[in-house]
Length: 135
Image (spheres, rainbow, N blue to C red):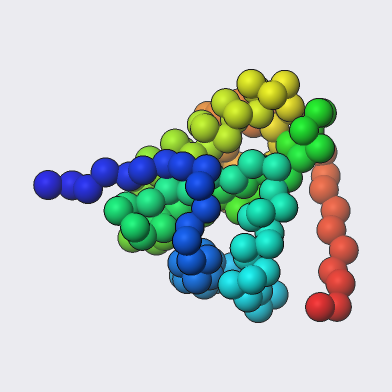
């Protein structure tokens, strides 16, 4: 019997699970700590978490002013849970939350993920820029 995934805006009791998730995806080049990740999530305008029982298997968040634009970032799923619709369900809920709040959802992603986001109505609209800092 397949276990069900529970989606919630309640953060994990222990953000070490999020650190494990980030590291499993190779996303921790900045060497973020458990405290950094907890602060990051708590400071987000909206965050959603996917759990299988007590295990964090996915997460996504939005940075926003709550009025005009919301930047979707950090949508991620543990590798062994990918391709099961978890990321799509989180993204659907993120978009729904933005639309209910009349906030325009936007995101930045690497080129090879554009096709993942296009079915949700996202279109490439400009060139983004970034600046590295010493951390």
